[in-house]
Amino acid sequence: MRLTQQQQATIRAVLRRHFGCNSQIRLFGSRADDTAKGGDIDLYIESDIQSPDQIVAARLNALAELHMALGEQKIDLLVRRQPGPELPIHRHAQETGLPL
Image 1 (cartoon, helix red, strand yellow):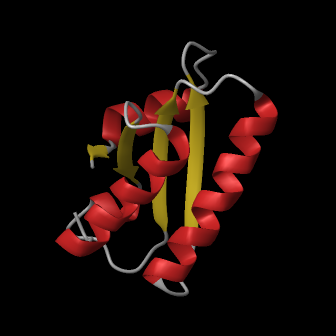
Image 2 (image 1 turned 30 degrees about the horizontal axis):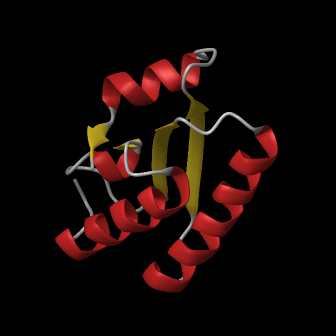
């Protein structure tokens, strides 16, 4: 995993603050691969929030806070509400991602 302990702690704290303390968070994509170089931070979160408006607000607020805390980095945040439909990208993130 190519994130420092501090970055991991920051991501966990921010996402749980906006999506709830029971949220499951995974890092997937190139940052989950120690042999890769560069790449954005791809995050997958499962949340109990059901309202689409609340999910959008939580996502936007979390991304703004992450950008302020981590600096100018490309961050992709994939949100799946629980229970909710599972898309192929969700399955990929679950299978290849590393828990934070």
